[in-house]
Image (cartoon, rainbow, N blue to C red; front, side):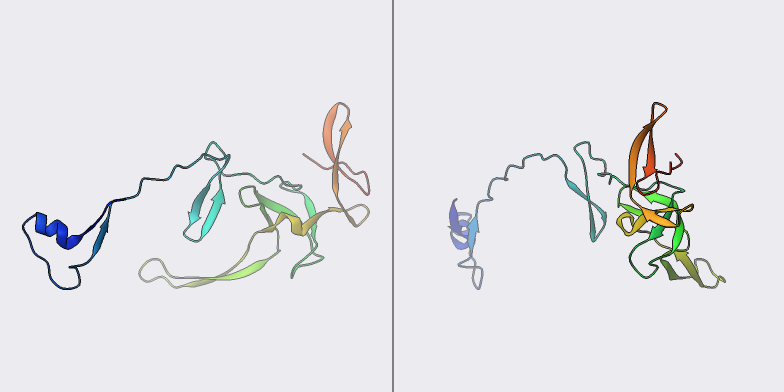
Length: 166
């Protein structure tokens, strides 16, 4: 790295410098570091959130044990023990939206002139690991497994051997 004083450079140019800048050091810029490409990188969803990406640049999907319209029971949190249905599955974040679970109050500001603000109560997603499948027939929670039935791979409840839809 070449180090020169600012005063020396200005003297070569025929200029003079006084004060705090007279003895300042200048450095040549360092060469850029090499970056190796990994299997996935991180991209910003919001300013404060990062999301893992695969090698194609798409978000990494979380493998989940629940699907839409599955009957589940909440096993942890404020709604523990509540039997509900999965409304929506978010594979990018590993969360699910369940009917009447994790209800939060959101204060919405008025958008246009003359409108009034609103207080909306709506369901918010919970992590898929906080629910288990529910057997309506035996009233028991169970893990899910896979079986071959008539040459097709189907999902079954391990405790009761019930075949799940879809």
